[in-house]
Length: 106
Image (tube, rainbow, N blue to C red; front, top):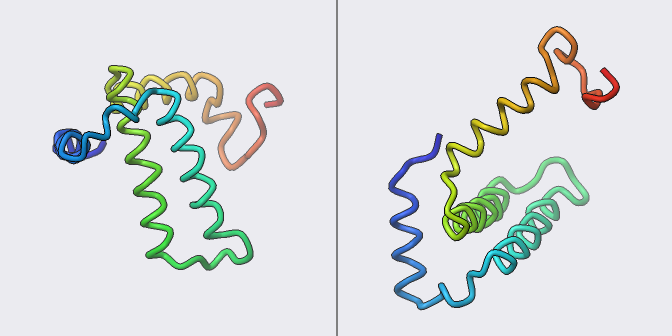
């Protein structure tokens, strides 16, 4: 999934700046939402967003998501795989291929 060397690099970055004190789970969840809004803003008026700005905002979202996973002690790879298994059960290929219908309406 993602490069395992990212977490040690993120941890070191946070430690160097003594930002861990601000990284409670609620604060990190809020930061994900805020940065997600900034990512969405890239597409507010035009589907052809500036890719460099999109990359920057996406990096912020992913950074906060990884920091939150670390804070609550979960493996991002494991929870993604677990969620995909749940989603596979909700959206079997034979019912959902090529459709955007919600699982309870398939």
